Length: 136
Image 1: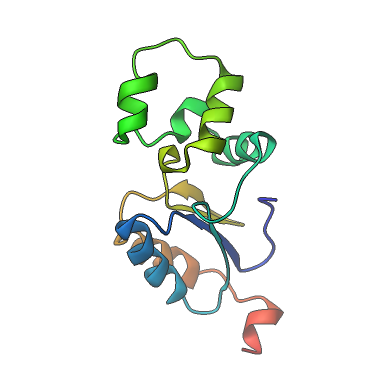
Image 2 (image 1 turned 60 degrees about the vertical axis):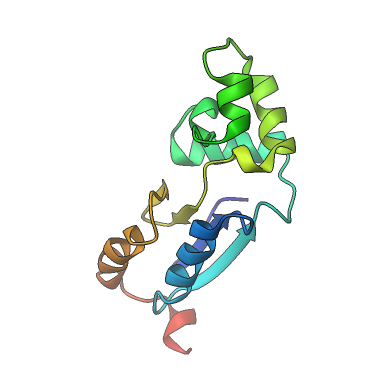
């Protein structure tokens, strides 16, 4: 699910978060890229997909959580929660996933702010466009 080709960008965001929507606008402005967006608020992810996402980002499951979310602070922080349970929580409590997340052939990361896409665009400008995007 998180494999990308050429100049494709997979962008995971939560449409219920204003900052994520702002970052989506920045990502859509990246030239010569095919944007494949996934609104995690509107679309369910399986525990397997969440695990694959953690592997792609090279982080632990607990690191996928938005540490500022009320659910995390009240139900998880400081407690010994099994990984299987963390996966199930992320599946059900969509506000807990730390978004936005950008995945490309060259970069996979959780973004801290919409402004971070500007520096990523500089990286992407040094990557030659794929045949698909040349014709757009």
